[in-house]
Amino acid sequence: MLLPRFSKLIARCFGRRWDLKENVRNMPHTTGRRGGMILSGCCRERLSVVGCFAASCSLCTTSRGSSRKKELSEKKLTSYFVDQRRVRLVAGSGGKGSCSFLSEPRKEWGGPDGGNGGDGGNVVIKVNQQVKSLSAIAPVYRGHDGQAGGSKNCFGRNANTTYIHVPVGTVIKENGNTMADLSREGQEYVAVYGGAGGKGNRFFLSNENRAPVTTTPGEKGQERVLQLELLTMAHAGLVGFPNAGKSSLLRAISNARPAVAAYPFTTLKPHVGIVQYQDYEQVAVADIPGIIRGAHLNRGLGVSFLRHIERCRFLLFVLDLSAADPGAQLRDLRFELDQYEPGLSRRPQAIVANKIDLPEARDSLAELRRHEKQRIIPVSALTGDNVEELLLHLRELYDGYLEAEQSSGMKPLRW
Image (cartoon, rainbow, N blue to C red):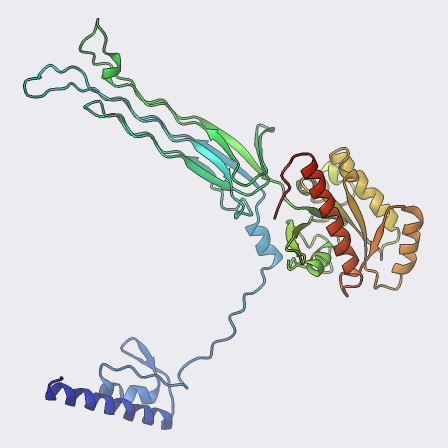
């Protein structure tokens, strides 16, 4: 039970609080600041009355808009996505050995008891499926040093391993030579080994030398400079010339939102979209930046984007039916792929004739079918016409890939 004095005080404060709310509704509002709080004119007049209670007014508050996440521009996506890194790796050094002698009551000449030092830490590059870019890779990584040895034959503690997490599909190169190809989740590559720990004077005890004072320092860790290159891991790759409609097609068949514009080279970095099927299978489709004639000679965006097609299990050639000769586009694309890597254009593929909604596209499609015996899928990424046929054929290519991988004893790529 409250004391009468405190109960009266609380009642008086609550009465003034409700009196303040009534005055807030009826008084004009002008902004002001007092006591670190933004108050209206009515709130400022009644501040001394309220005391320790805080009151708010609906007219003083600002309306909050919808917290919808804005789409990133292509410029920001380019800065976030990094597919090449040059890193310097230095492993940890071993701990030095200890020089000490045992001295206890009734055992003054116990002999040497200096322990060995701990080994230095390795630097390991490990695949993490949650990482999608090399943007978080630092230019220099240093391993931890081993702990020095102690007396009473105490060995130093070995240093912990330093892990560098990279995306699936990272290729490790040194001086242009491929050292490792990390294409599976959890795969590891020991880049540099830590130095061995030094020896304490206990190690040098012998019949000839009963009181050694010799110790050795820990060895230095290895040091290397490696080049990390990310090859996009996707089931299908959209291959075509600039402004063929690859980004629009990716937006039509998946939830990816790459930038779309009416000028060439809108896409500067590969985008990966996921196509969802009713049986919960997921097919990853990569939007490769536009290829031009002479790309294998590093013209245009060059070889830096041709290498992203290496990991695609099957290809989707996207042709622009509004162009004069779509058949020439297909021949040029196949030529560029074969010049970069022989046999790359003969992978399982589909020919997608885009922009079928344009008036001149019908004649171009008929001309293309007269010269090309392979199946051609006409679609319109803008209106969504015939996209269902493309999705069905994409699933056929994916099922064929699964059967081929399982028959060869390999584990298929699951996104």
